[in-house]
Length: 344
Image (cartoon, rainbow, N blue to C red; front, side, top):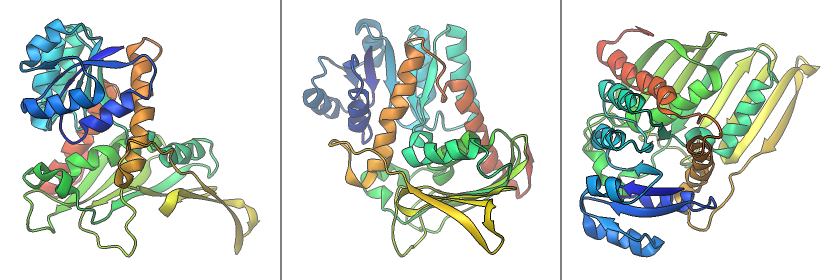
């Protein structure tokens, strides 16, 4: 599988490393508006060509797909450019900076008859997958309430300074991940209510958000908590915690990748049986230690995307599916603005 990369920013090095963990995959061209930045990555990874014009790269490189890693405000532009060249495209999350642009990107690829896939890797984290397997196994019966939490004070603006200036920050950045995991666990939402807040005075967008949804056939009440303003005793960035109550027990994903399963049908009322397992991610030499949980999930996500691109199945994070996550993100912004429940 030969691919071209549009964008050579912070995540590009880790994207390339993730692709190269899979045999038979190679990057044959790269474009960035900062040519020197693209040249540095090309030299590091042995990419044979650096292009000043993305149109020329799509037309000339002979790629099987394109990987778009630019800022969200340009995603629709580059996805539609790939569709015009009848080239399958993998796009970084969030798919677009508005719901209308996300819908247009999906429609363009559908009209062109080419796959649009989203590099939504959060659901591919090892502890999140293991938790999901237990949840779907009916280990705690039918879930009636759940909570997903991503709260820390990690200095994300140091390596991604552009995030300081975005008007829509945490719901678009982390919310696209956490709300996608909520869909992965509980199904589609029928309603949501959201609140947002800016705590850090040095940024433009919101850095705290809470979204409450009713989800799936079981009508599970799910709360998603997101914050880059939370001062905690022990930082666990970038871990996401989960707690789900079912009619047969509870499941908890807590610090250091520990999953606790409490079965109400074992033990006694005042001494239930709790099983604990630790499910850490694999480690890769190229991963940034501060992001190794996320970087490891890139490899698994890419494996799923490659299966789709090779015609061996349908990716979990194809454009149609991810569009549902984008609807949650932007309806959450609408709910927070008007202060009411949004029916979906």
